[in-house]
Amino acid sequence: MKRKFFVTILVGLFLFLTVSDILPNTDILGWDKARWGMTHSQVSELYDLKDWEVKHKDSPKWMNICFKKTPINIQDREFRVWFFFDKESPDGKLIRVNLSSGAKGGDAYSFEKIAELLIGKYGAPDSDRTKKSNILGRAERTMLWSKKSGQLKCKIMILLTGYTQEAVCSLYYTSVAQ
Image (tube, rainbow, N blue to C red; front, side, top):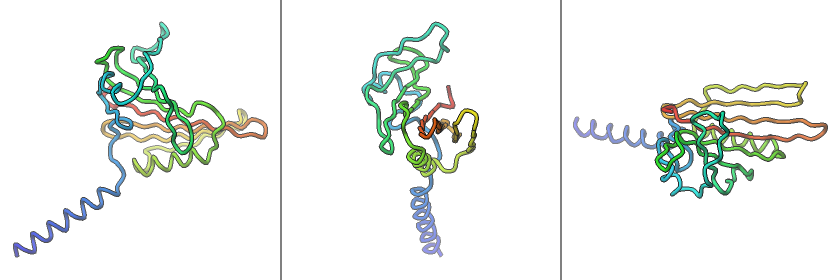
């Protein structure tokens, strides 16, 4: 009887560990190696950051931003990375990370591949909206994941100008505790 119980526990543990490896991540703890609440100094050790961005006098209080010096590549698309901190100092805490493809010219297909990667990592989004505007010649898809520690918004905009199509993708990672 004890042996059956022990074997059942071992099989259950094995199945739990196996399934947990293939299930999507259940939380958004930050972006890449940066975690919510890390200080500016800690994030600077992970990434080569530019100096603080100059703020406009009417900027919100939380608008303490440093850019990663070099862009990153996702699905062969270049993205610029912004780190937002709660104050402009070495001990300012990380509260948000934005990624933007910035330059137009991307195609909608490559950005839809990014959406698929995010769904694979975080599961189905909590909301997924598509908005089309024939007057302005653009379409927009916005997906939102809300987790215990953070949120992620993925916004893909497709601009139709004449016979050409340009697409832009932005990812907004935000700490829930801010």
